[in-house]
Image (cartoon, rainbow, N blue to C red):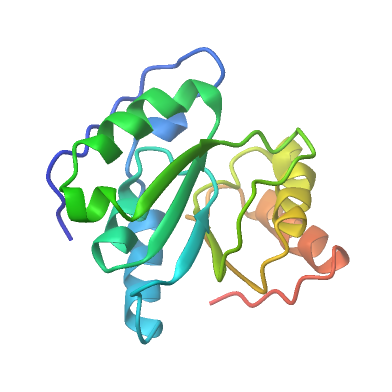
Length: 170
């Protein structure tokens, strides 16, 4: 699905790496799966971790979901630029917040699902990612990633299971 106004920028910025500046295949795949499997997006409360360009948040908001898009401080300017370039109907369905997984603080709000794509590229962040998901106390989480480091990604799945998650790999 093409949404006009999505800017990509792989420039390394203070407070983040360049990975947040691209639309990744896993985000596109996750969007397709969520839109095809969830009966109605209208009013679905979504917390997106590591929103990057905002592409996934915009796709879900365009279908009627109420999305809280989160990102590290350094990646927020591009995220905000892309969100604010959308139509008023989409813009009304998206909130943006800074969320640093290493700081043990949950955002205020209630969500039906947590989503994230291509956020498993740093093994050092796995524990803080899982703790962030746990802090937000949401019954369902859907993560998508493109396999790049199979052994590290297997470690994430094992770690998620140890943290009490019922992990299903599709």
